Amino acid sequence: MKTALRTLPLVGIVMVAVSCDNVEWGGAHLSLRSTSDDLAEVEAGVPLSDPIPAGDTVAAEPLGPVLYMGRRSGSQASLIPVAEIRTDGLYSLEVTSVEESRAFAADNVSAGSEFTLFADGRRVGRLSAVDFGVDERYCRPRPQITGPIELIPDASAVRTFLALPSQLGSTFLHGSYAPVPQTRDLRVVSLTMMQSIIPSVGAPWPISVLGIRRDIQVFRANLDEAPTVVATFVNADALDVGPAPRGAYSVFLVASDPDGAGYRTSYTDYRLASRDGKGTARYFDHLDLDRDGSPEIVLEVMGRNSMWLSALSRRDGAMQEAYRDPCGLPAPAGVTGAP
Image (tube, rainbow, N blue to C red):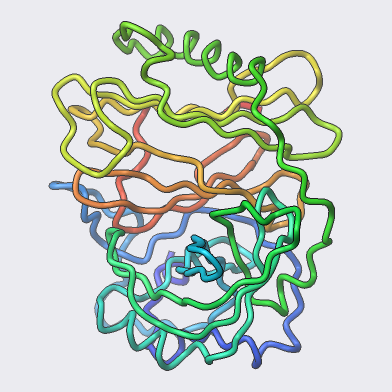
């Protein structure tokens, strides 16, 4: 446990693209790692991992490549780090304040550094770092990198994406960017799955299942599989940050049909706000970071006071939470993964 809970000096948190020419990417096995003793969203939280006893010395390991997420505004875009990628999992960056975020951006990312952009699991362009700042919308301030982007013609409408430093992103196959259209049948899949989840978790029936679907996305995890459907349902609340009314609950689901036998839920996150705390998840994007044929899914989670990030990955035959910001709520008992 000691090696998972690391304290890195700020000078060791380096994300300089030009210094990584000799990095070899061997993939990553993703698992939940916490670097904080507290959960900011929990009034009486339980640490995710044991703290390092006083007096113990744990050598800081070099920072690995970092996964970023980004949003576009016209010909510009901004990136924020999701987590450090290591061979044994995703690790939270030790940046916990505005001051540390500014120092990270100013001192550790060079102007002109390039990042490869991905959408729907495919390379769609690049960003060149120009300006640096802080994004304070999350439960911890995050460094922000801003600069011009270049997109392939087929991805001219892309607004959000994941990103990797260019020397790592170039190792991913280009492939063809071909987002899956949302057909009526795929949208019905989300409703059918939700109708089976409600009684299984004991949630109150809404007036309309369709009426509480706040978000739906579809993507193709593998070329030889049917599209994956991800959807967020929110009852008596909104898909945003803020207090949850009495009786509010949310369901985030992943439905897939890997063998052609019909759609079934492969991941369900049911949260009753009064019992589990508010944590409404929304799909952001996906990318197969560990090259195992099953993409990692990055989520934004809306809490009572702020957002946090998490990631799902298939492990031991089931979809599971592989990363969560240390300041985010833990998964409730209603979370289930299936093959």
